[in-house]
Image 1 (cartoon, helix red, strand yellow):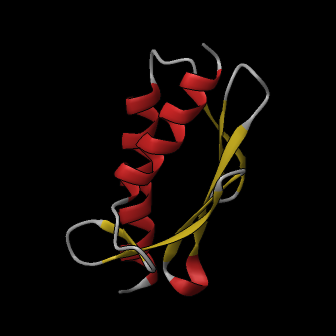
Image 2 (cartoon, one colour):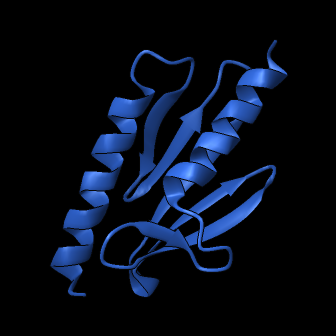
Length: 100
């Protein structure tokens, strides 16, 4: 994958993530070049980082860290093979339940 392809794929991912969070209790905030935080009302956050050298998206939260690599169809965890959507959905749901 070229730098340009990686940039386009991750741009698309972050655009979709922002749309998915629109209207929720979480906000997507860009904190640096390729670094975003999903911020919650209770001051917790999930860091989502475009890691160009490895061509991966890295996700870090209190519950743990994940590295996701594009497999031609989706971003997959390099250890568990879960999709980034499944992992982030689980992390966000856990935070939503914590606030109830």
